[in-house]
Structure formats: C-alpha cells, structure tokens
Image 1 (cartoon, helix red, strand yellow):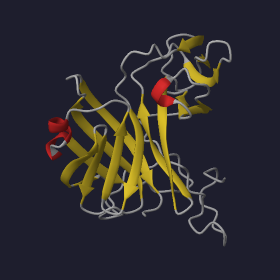
Image 2: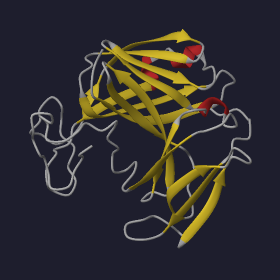
Image 3: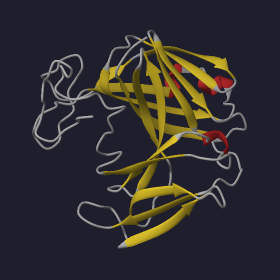
Image 4: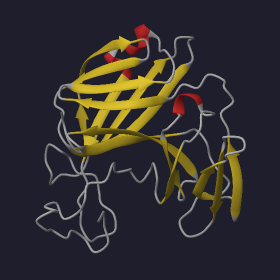
Length: 243
C-alpha cells in the first residue's frame, strides 16, 4: 500500500490520499519501526498465530491485536515490558526450539546501548497477563486477556481510561495530535467509559459514548488478574471501520 512519502496522493481508489494502515502507532510507543514477524508453532502458548511488531527506534517489541470489520483490517499494539540491547529489526522463530530470535543494530535516532545484538525471547510457560484480543463494537470495545481477570476490578469503570486523537497527514515530517471534536485544535479527547461488564472470565466489554473511525485511540487500564497480580497496560489502536 501507499502510506507516506511525498504526502497525500488522491486517486479514485484512494480518496484519503493514502491506504489506511492496520494501525497507527504513536511516536512515544515506536519512533522508528523495524519489521514484523508471525508467531509460529505451539511453543508460545496464548500468543500462538499472533503478529509481533519490532521497534528499531525504541529497541522494543509490540504485540499486534488484529480484527477485520466489513473486510477492513484494523487493530492496535501492546508494548511488551522488554528492552533489547540494540534496535531490533529482524525476528525469526526457530524451527528447532520454537522460540523467537532477534537481531538489531544501532544507528540514527535509536535508543540502543550496543552497536548490535542477537537475542532470544522465549515463553517459559509461567503465567503471563497479556491482552490477546481487541474488537470494536458500535457501542463499545471488547478486550480479551490471556488469563482470567478479577471480576471486581475489571467491572469498575474508574479502572479504565480511553482517549482518542487524529493526525494531520501531509508531506511534513510527523504530525501533532489533533482533537477529534475539533480538527483544528491540538490535543486529545477523553472518551467517557459509561460502564464495564464481564463477558466471560477473561473478556471485558467497555461501553463508551461514541465509537467512530479514528486514527489513534489509547486504552489504559489498571486491573488485577484472578490471582491478585496487578495488570497495568495501555493499548494504542486505530479504528478504520465500525460494525
């Protein structure tokens, strides 16, 4: 697809001037993207068949949560609490041990501490509290977790915070955040969470005021796993289409 260089290029098949990406990623989450890799085999437990996104600039790795609405692909990213020694750009799952091997380097605008790295990420089988699903509904958002969550914590709207904003797509380098409520004002809009309910022991539905296509949304939560472990995370997602 066409996503950037030279600014918008409007055609009959591309009315926005660019092809909608699966998701936008805010600069603080990934300043310079490296590449993607699919989880293969069955050694990564709850993350089987998921997509991983690598950050060269931040030396980190994200889980990509994907869905398709009316044939339009969209989703979001969750940043693993891992920091690599260099800017990871290439990842492969080994057919020998089923684990992920990453290589990276250091260059311009990179948070690397070393000139290069080859590192492994493995799933130990121990409990991991991760978001594994994100779905958009016309009246809210559905979050699915890898383990059961505490019902009381996950049913409290005060434990969730949602905000949204757009970017200005142009030939300039980057963009400020622009309010959805007023496209000419910089900033972000808070999205009120009216209510939260559990759909099952690991799936939470957030009822929000209005679900609309938006370039960037941030979904933050501070809940607990069923065994009391704190789960404090943020997912940055894009809504290209609403059911």
